[in-house]
Length: 338
Ligand code: NAI
Image 1 (tube, rainbow, N blue to C red):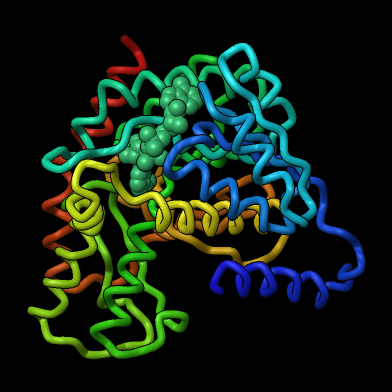
Image 2 (cartoon, rainbow, N blue to C red):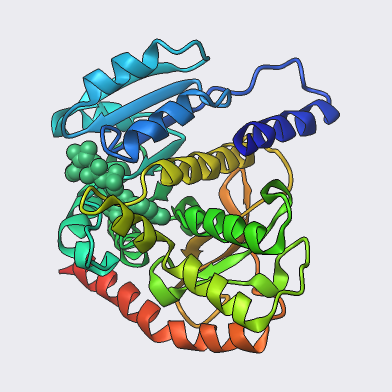
């Protein structure tokens, strides 16, 4: 429902500006890793988005089936499946937005950093292909560890001479989605009305929800806020354990990925005041990448917002996360340059 109301909010902005009768512009979205646990429901949700005119589904295998299946749905976009590296160029050509959920997910007992060795290589090679075939696309990285894979992509783009910090995003929306749901439960308010900024990074203690800025305000006790913070930080692990070896969050991640892609597309289309948290190149702290609210526009990131007023507990959380986040960023940069 939120996805739909988000979409209709966008079109009402357009109608107020007087071009309601014009169709939304042509937009090609490519999903790399489209046959996976996240990739399949993400493909479905993007197929439902009226802002997409062309949906390109790429994976090392399985995409002809996913594409044939999704293509029968009665919505605007043309769907094409691409399989294997020799088709990656075609999959990317002309893409406005590229979403990357390619890679291995966690099993119980694993941290996101345990995925580094496999996923870092996958993201490095996909980023090289983006630099070659769709250098102007807005790139949304879902593959973990996001704290390292985003810096890897940035380094690859820098080497290729295509880097524009406004066009690279780490998708942290699932942390926001979780924080909203958990907060709504405790504050006893409808989740559709809730807003909670989440800043920092996307792993364990680097995920810092700012419940002091949550709306509607609820004056929850400190111990409740601390439990909510911990649950948001461990939300991914909650799903990994419940799935007991069958992977990590896929359905809620697909929702979050589709929600963020919709925001990026609205920004591209000139809808004003599209603001979502994302892990981007940043001057908000002394770390080179950091998640905070960003304004999305025709060039991607138009403005990175600061942190606002933090509670003492959040200030402490911010200090505690800096070491780990800095190390993860550094690890990504090193990997990309070796
Ligand atoms: P999955 O194993 O079900 O699917 C991954 C897909 O990637 C597979 O279809 C595989 O064939 C494909 N793939 C592997 N190498 C590829 C390559 N070089 N090019 C294109 N596709 C390739 O895994 P799942 O559950 O979909 O998770 C994917 C990633 O998303 C993992 O890294 C996971 O940790 C991450 N994730 C991120 C979240 C976030 O909040 N940012 C939340 C949940 C998961």
